Length: 265
Image (cartoon, rainbow, N blue to C red; front, top):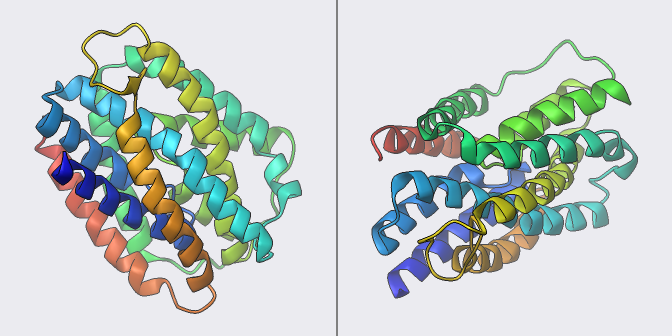
């Protein structure tokens, strides 16, 4: 139990730092680590473990994303009127997908996660300079994009930051504001998805102790507690340091995570 707790606390620290600096909810870190923990310490089947890891990751994003967006709002890195255009689509996409995901093929979920991990690593590592920019859409098209990103994010167990941040930067939004917007929308992805993961897992037998549906409470509490501390610190660091080196390191880490998941299960 002590080893499990240490692993979860360290994972939460990494997640909090990434959330505050890059607007990333941390699911690409949480899902493989929690999948390993549930298999290794609780003898959960791989199919069950990855569903619980995704559900727990999305629930944790409610708290880390909420804390991150709160501090970004205090530091004027947030525009709620812009976020409001995307929230209905985000909620609809995440909640609908959460009810469908337990019925999807687990191999599909696993390989979707791996493919997106490699894609995100490539996109973050190359960090292209975008020369052509266009204005943000509003209304219908904003919700279509929000719905699409939320649906993909729910399948993978992420807060959508690796898609939302580049999208907002492309549409003339300053990088720090893009991070704040991404953090806020991650909260609504987590909210919509968590309800579905709880309901779908309520009547599933042989889940690990202290679980509510497909959400593993010890993992949620330990990772969230440590991540909230580092979210607050990281939202201060974003004004003091360049995040370019961190992005390169994170990209390499994602590549290694993708490889480890490729050979897991």
